[in-house]
Each structure stands twice: as structure tokens, then as C-alpha cells.
Amino acid sequence: MSDEKRFLLRLSQDLYDQISELAQKDHRSVNSYIVNLLDQQLPVNNFEDRHVLKQIINGATLDLVNNLILINGIYYRFKTDNNDRIDSTANYCIVATDGNLLTLQKI
Figure 1 (cartoon, rainbow, N blue to C red):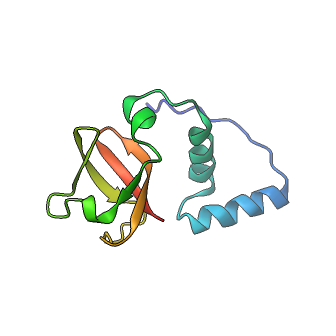
Figure 2: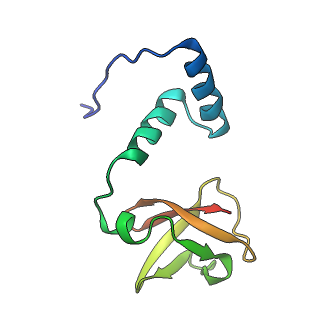
């Protein structure tokens, strides 16, 4: 059984269209996009979110052989938000955490 709560949400057609367009650009369903937006607005409550999220990382510091990065004395696995290869000359922002897996976005 799912622990998700379902409910009806009423939106104007114009707002729905705007969200739908943004969701499509983000490769998400409208529902997933709205849930992600709401989730981002909740208070941060875990170590990674408090101490790692939104840090800027230089691509040259990433261990591309083992897909690891050392941050604050802790090794984390990483992936990019769009599954592109890492550009060692670029900078990345940590945009999400999931346990010891960090999601990086090229900036």
C-alpha cells in the first residue's frame, strides 16, 4: 500500500499550462513537478541538506573513476541531474541529496 496522500487540486488553465510546460522541460510529469516544487520548499532536516546542498563543486575535484567526491571529510557518490558526462573544466552545484548520493547540476 502506498503512503502517498491523493487529493484534488484546482488550477486555472493558464497556471496548469505554465506548469505543464516547465514540467516538460524538466522531463517530469505535472504531478511529479508540483511534488518536487513543494518538496523544495519544506524545511531542511538532514545532515546532507544542511551541510552539502547548494555547495559549488569544481569538476576537476570529482573522482570520475569511482564516481566519488570528498566533501567535509565524507565520500559521496554523485550523478548529474541530466545524466550527462562530467565536464572537468566546469563547476557544479549540488541540487539534491539522497542518502550518500548527490545530484549535481552544471552551472
